[in-house]
Image (cartoon, rainbow, N blue to C red; front, side, top):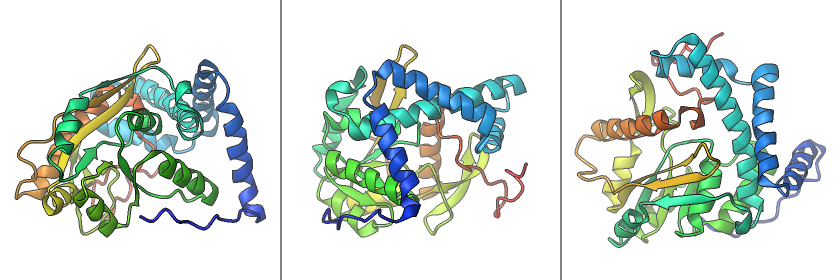
Length: 303
């Protein structure tokens, strides 16, 4: 969790595309937000129709999660998701590099629930999921509630450095995903930690449970962390509204949590995520290979 990092060198040619991209988006982030929003949605629409990166993964996810929708409705939702992804890119740039006065209008509901949980003095897991609004809403909330974050570094070294700088500049504490001891220590010290366990991978702390009624690798660590530290688990979600404003909703801490049944706890969390995703289905991160119909997960995403 130390914030003493040697400044990386990006002189090698392989880093130049990333540096140029960061420089370009830093310039674009200075445009009026209305212009950035239009550019983001336009970029998403372009990738949906022309580049189609992960488009098949999105289509499979939506077909499995929303079987009640017609193919036409699923296609329209996929297109809307790509526009949301494009907008999320510009939201991230705004969140990382721009001053507070440039943030779009937003409303925070339920802040008292987070304050009540923190008053217990045993730390708080601020439970959320991977939505395309992740970065902008976290930036909005941290302006009012100091909290830390659990994060995974990006594969691209240039982007990873920008993410690290943004995390450490804005959050109270930044813990890498694989730093379990650091996470436990932060919670025991009473920190609020932003925590999104919805992108599961097979580990000792995972199992396969229904997600939208479909088998998915599910993280069971949430209840273990709460049990080991006494931390409260407070659901939090940030969404875009149709009028361009943002709604940040903080719910009461989960009662009777954790229980002796970690799978039941994890399934309860999946149900909370499902409810929030249904409220804004285009804003969830559907490009992730979320479902596993068998242990290997073979065949699901094969075109």
